[in-house]
Image (tube, rainbow over the protein chains, first blue to last red):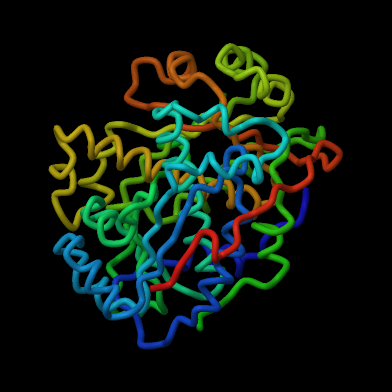
Length: 196
Length: 196
């Protein structure tokens, strides 16, 4: 058995961590966002393709550009959050594979195969989004991930003229426990898993 | 700033952890797989929908059923791995929302909306797969995630007659460093992120 995480670390990542809608005024320094990326980017992706691209929406001007894309239920909390990350993925991620995965001609696996490009970009960009949520928690930040928004509007406002497409959003800050709902139930092992 | 992970824990999850192709003979007890699920299931999903479903392929008989679906490059390492997890998602996950998300009639958001069902199942099932990779690492296990296989064949062999569809595979065990490739480069913050 290799090294394992102690109970405190497991709690920070999984058990005590909650999805937050309301955040304290405590600032979120740019440097912590950079540290979170530096952790999350080490997580595995297929052929090391790393399609995730992130825009951190922090300034009032950028928040105003995000606003029209938000679902009504996500509007106020997102406008008030210290930072909102747009987790996107680069649909031309394969152009970087000669550098990121030099062991094989991995670029040729994707060129012209739209189904494989889309599946790989979405699956691996989402995995990286999951690593990023846990990296933020590892650094003492709280998250409020959301998929309730208009992707086409976000793409037009933040990724126009690029091959990047939005996937989901994460409000980021120091959560205010006063804004928490009771925790939702989770599926037991026997409900979700089996061993064959 | 809330509690943060120390350098050792960050290293176990992100920096020292590697994708493994070759595993030692050290057994992987069922109980550790259960513990990993119990951690990973606490990670956030939209409307707490938890679509991920996992089959742990361990017995020689089950491995033989998996074998014809594997890409040639993934065949030997997967047959030799102590356990291979099939990460799938339940395309009828929304039927559980009245229990998992009792705050609203979330089931009605999905019924009959195939695009939203597919997008939500894939995005959230993949997020849960990412949490699961890090939960396995937190418990001292190593992972070899893969998407090189025939999904339709896996679905026929393991999910026939169910609304569950395969997403990706994870070989699980105690990695043998002798089987490692040099680590691939990662994108810098400035290459993948921007702050607005």
